[in-house]
Length: 126
Image 1 (tube, one colour):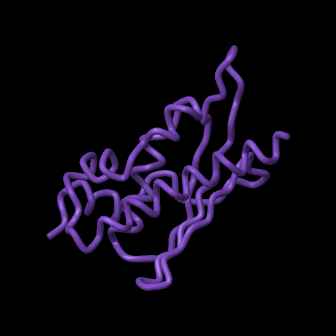
Image 2 (tube, rainbow, N blue to C red):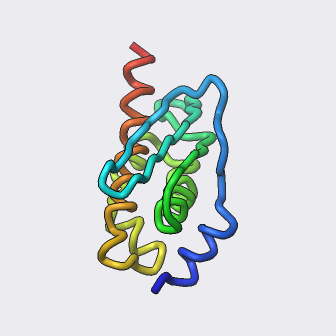
């Protein structure tokens, strides 16, 4: 059974789409379940900090995959890159009101996609 938050993010996902000329792109997938997530970030400099000023996702997968992609964008928007890197799959799952045990891997995929997008940003910056 999905929580109200999961259903809301699945039926009305936030920040869905693609960012052209993204500063960082993270792509992950799970061949066992077929989920594929792509996360795009735009970063701006504020003093010494680098802030996620825009974040979007494209996800092909189940309700939990779409909901976790949507929620991770909500959680990361406006955060520094260091703060965003510290979001865990447990934080994400808790924010959604818990996921069924067989769907926790979706939260892990979303977190990995965010971290890959941040890594990609740092690679492009060098």
